[in-house]
Amino acid sequence: MSAYIMRRILGAIPLIFLVLVINFLILHLAPGDPVFFFIQGGAGTTEEYVTQIRKMLGLDRTLGEQFLIFMKNLFQGDLGYSHFYQRPVLDLILERLPITLLLVILSTIFASVAGTILGTFAGTRPYSVVDHVNTSIAVFGYSIPTFWLGQLLIIALSIHLDILPTGGIPSRFTGGVGLLDWMRYLILPVISLGFVQLALAARVMRASTLEVLGMDYIITARAKGLKESVVVFKHALRNAVLPVLTVTSVNFAFQFTGALIIETVYSWPGLGRMMFESVFRRDYPILMGLLIVSSVAVIVVNLIADLLYAYVDPRIVYD
Amino acid sequence: MNPEGGHPRVEDMEKFDAVGRNLWDFWKGYRRNKGAVFGLFFLVFIVLLAILADWITRYGPMETGVGLPLRPPGSRFFMGTDDLARDIFSGVVYGARVSLMVGFVSALTATILGIMIGSASGYFGGSTDYLLLKLCELFQSVPRFLLALIIVVFFGNTIWNVVVVIGILSWPRTGLLVRSEFLRLKQTEFVTAAKAIGMSGARIIFRQMLPNVMHIVLVTASLEVGAAIITEAGLSFLGAGDPNLMTWGRMLYNAQGFLRNAWWMAIFPGCGIFFTVLSMNLIGDGLNDALNPRLRRIKRQ
Picture 1: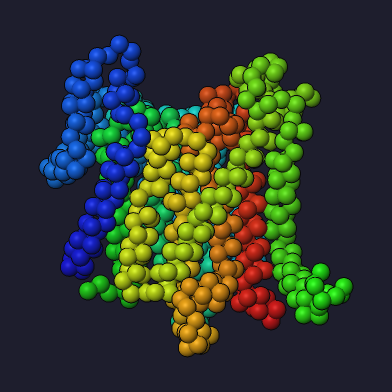
Picture 2: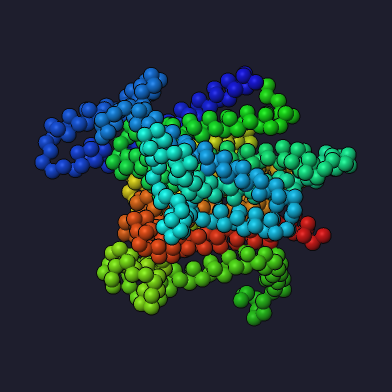
């Protein structure tokens, strides 16, 4: 098992390296001079000053040198320094990462649990009312942009019914709100972000439940006279849930970037806003840092999902 | 007309009949799916709106101060006006042009790339397959939306850049499907026969194998159109869209600050995205029902 994990991690390294190179090239080969953005196109700046800034940003070196310096710093756990924020990139990211991860993880849990339950009921009763509801949710979920769903929920639930906050999230420790009150801020963002994933999970779960229920071991279980609920929830579910695990892990990158957009809708203080501002400001160190963090997160999640398989399905043996 | 005489040749008639019969067969399969029929009609409706935009709107989509700002839907502005007193209806109608263009052109790009990479990978196998599969993995582990945003902002936020970026970043889905179908088809007898009579690789790929996977490619392409429309709307929603065009995503970006006082700024453009993408997804579903030979047989039984 541990050998398998090691091999997976080692196998991911070339992939991460390639992702780094590509991201680096895209950022640095793009037209436009970051110095220009740094001085805000200020009029009356002297040639000397521009050279000085260029040197400070490390842009006076060749592309190869810049990449080597970047890689060297990376191995020392240094993601670079943002001159706009006047702080190390790692600090800036770590400060905002937890709130973004909270959103991603909660919405993923919400989507896979709700989707699994819905899909199981739809799969055990094909062409029933539950099944039609399931199909409608799936079609609906695929077609609605998350950020618009977010806006709709704000208009309906926060503004017209006034039962949930329109956005923002107070700090858990210094915000001075109780746990229950704090959780109210999570509901809308989690639903908006999780809905697409829920649709997907429900659809996949329905199909796989239908398939599993036709298998021989289910017939055996029924023939033994087991109760239908035991057959479905104890025997079928465990097998049928595997594809849901796959789609959830494959879509993790999608969820992560989705979270960044949803943060804009609900004005969350996570990575989203910093990222969008850095894009328009051409803050290379922050963008590189974010691309690294998100690519690594995607690869790690896929690894975790693979290991979860073994837990859910004991027939899978890693060697 | 053929040069030999005034009457069409029998073979041509038969060919024409065969095409007609196939189309009719297709339509019989397709229309059984009510959602898909709705989707098709809605898509035609949106396409008509986009084509007739100049005739059915009274104001330009970017024209400010056409009335009072932030007016709710009424008789003069039937979708209301925004904060700069632009007509929302004009924006929605002209936005349809952009969304449809982006959706279809980027899906086409992604599909062509996917077919070329997927078929090469599946047909040649070996190290070609390995490299292309790794490339696919690479594309799937970068956060695509983030990359699209960065590229569009850095290389200039023109509509063509948006189209190209979305197209290039979305080929893996089609690519993987085509690859796995090619792997399967490679084992079949008709491909072995084609090889045995000395057909060239390109001819086998494009004339023999590709027609057999087109039904899957078409279904995926229709889903890809919807996905591209949502991605473009997301880019515009973050302010990275083409500044010279009114798009649905940009209208939602404008609406974000006015959710409390002007719900109509968010509702109508959002409905545009939702129903257009919904119709594309329903059409994809119908195509799947009509074109998937295995499914058709199951349904007949």
